[in-house]
Length: 426
Image (tube, rainbow, N blue to C red; front, side, top):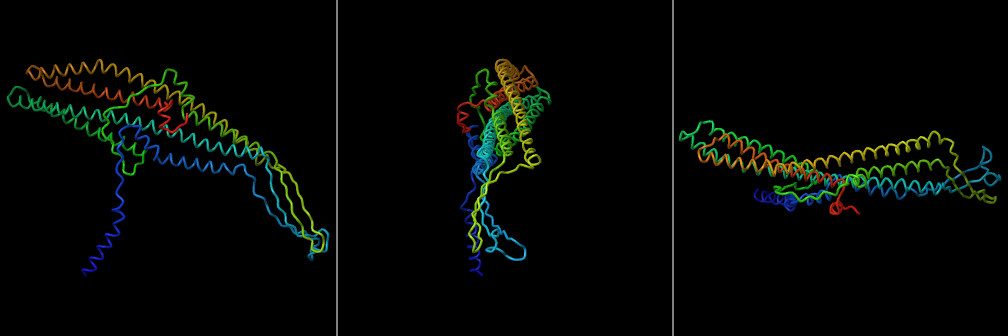
């Protein structure tokens, strides 16, 4: 029994060895949004799928303009129905022929160009997706900054409320204040705890968005975002540049070109094909027969087969042009939204930093000093502390809004650094 037990334990250890030899991947701990963006661009499954489709489109384009395969045919030509007359009749023979269809060079070139356009369209879609991923990561990073800044400020305010609660409890014990003051400080501290729980959930939701983009095997472990990278907005007039540089507009233009090439290829299909052939006929004791053929396709059914395809391709061209108009309208709207968000964030930052926050800080200091000296009320300290907290939180949110507006702007008009990050050639 002991031998069997030891053998079983050894077998279990051997089976578990591969699992022990492959430790779980550590979580990704990005320190900046661009570091996270690089990881996402390298591992995002949707981008990988587009890369594979691009490879497939390029592989499919190679044979698009090739000649069709030749046809090998055999033929028995027999005079009479009651007996085999090969070798006895001049018109009877057993023949072998090789026939080749010859589409015109223009038709083959149009097919190849249309197939190449499909690859260019996939590449444009991948380019647009890369910009969307980087922009979403930057906007999510701004959201994390606002959440983490508010969490830190809540912790600071909770410490202040704890001190106020202790002071109120001491005064209540000595009979110099009412019970309401002692309870009020505890109530405000409890409200901050509830708010902190909501912030933890909000941060988890943002992290889930980022995990979807990055697809890290070990997950994400983003440390608290204490500061945002500096931003540099493009010069005035950038919305006009966005109409030339925006990825959706560029993709729409590529789609028009692809549709036009497919329509041109469909029109070329209306042209007849040539065919050539040759072979030899065996006639037994009679001389062999040399067979040479030359033919031209008769497009008798083109009205029913080919012309509807031309009409469909031309309709796709018109649809692609409408898509371009829609992409341009969307780009103009996105540019206007980014500009409006920037203006709002900048103006609000100035207003809060130079107005609300200094006033709230001064009021809090005065109320706290008065309460410490025994002249003020706790309710005044609580109100001023809440006002100071909201002003500090508002500064962080406006900073996040400004960074998000910059991210949206750079998604439309990328800088040289952005192009390097995206892998785009100038």
